[in-house]
Image 1 (cartoon, rainbow, N blue to C red):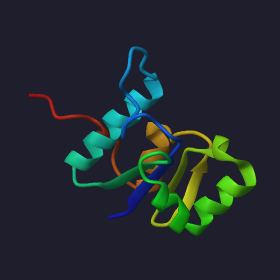
Image 2: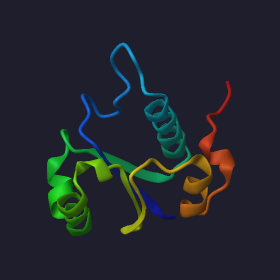
Image 3: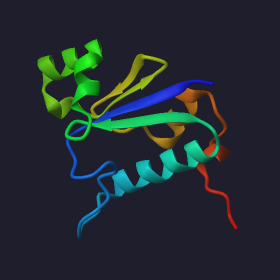
Length: 110
């Protein structure tokens, strides 16, 4: 199974969904990532303030930030290949990148 990594801008916490006003896009990504993980899909997310070492050791991410600035984040990779720069992938793009069924994005209902 493929592995997706999302390199995100600096945030106050690992998900960025704290505080009085929550960015709906971050909430969507957090929900999608949690559901993917529950279904066994390998997904990692690193934010610049919490995981700066991950940005330094990944040569292509480091190069993008040096050339285009931190405004180019988030950057998404799948199996080490950059698939999206500058915004989070849509649910449809995630399914396409990972070659998975859209049902894996949904949480189980109890």
